[in-house]
Image (cartoon, rainbow, N blue to C red; front, side, top):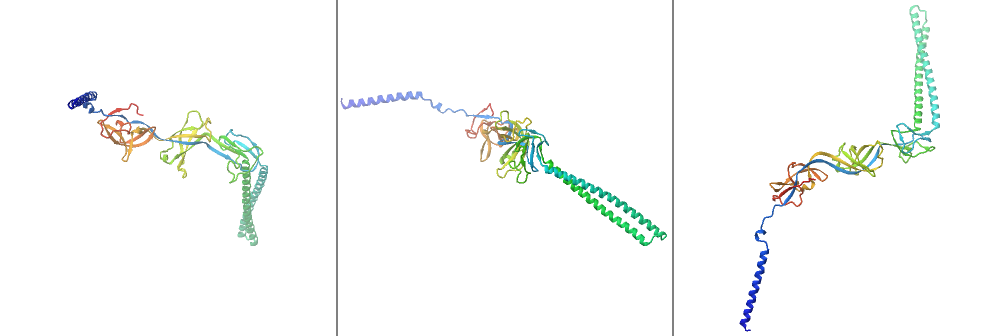
Length: 411
């Protein structure tokens, strides 16, 4: 083969390769989309919207609590002696004034007998002083009458000497002085009677303390004595249950629920706010109550305010000392305009929601209030008819054309 033939063969190979490449490229163009399909405009994105809804809103607080008796009294001995009788035990129901125990103090009974005898003696002395006073009053009246008679006789006929007349006047003055002494003796005897009577009443009062009585209707929660025990009169250093109390009586027909409200929640707290109480270990429905009172001051150490809820307990199902959980519903607003919390955003300009105007995303500034159960109160900037974008996340830029889609379930 010469050079010319070799060159022809190479040209033929190149032509065949180019032709094959053209065929492959043509097939690829047929399979690919046309330039018109690539530039076709996409439809506007869909955006979920909802209507604001009016619901009951409240500021809610979950906190721990303790149940306590409505009233509780530790009963101490006022006098020292031996217990001769113990009439109640723990769990017994008692009435106000009921005798729970008796202290035997024999020497005090003897003191009372002596004081009564002394009082009788002083009363007798007072009676004698009164009779003496009456006698002196009569004697003074007699001496004054004699003096007037003698004066009349002496002035008229000179039958009475001056000496006799002076004696008569002296007798009248003596009678007057005796009357003053009798009055003083009467007053002294009366004061002695008062002192003796006070002594009798004092001993009677002390004897009354030998009976330990219930201060109110309730239940005996603690008994720390038995018959024959020597009890000592309470002092300033012995007034704790472990230092001399005989009984502890609790009134449990009403239970106090104590809880602490933190400083940030205090402005929302009001008397009458609803409360749900769930005692620990209690099977059944929670107890419903209301805030009854609060201390009007914050504890400087905890910055909490002591709050109380009174619960009727006529069936005595609740016991003092029980731990509980309390849910307070404060600042209740029954007709608040709300949206889901996810629909409200916040930045340096304040709170806002996205809405749809002429099928385009717009921003609307709002003012918010309470947040409760996944919803937030809108106090200004929004009406019930304004469509609100359900979430502030993943929203196209403002003024973007969108297709609003109403959410059926506005949770």
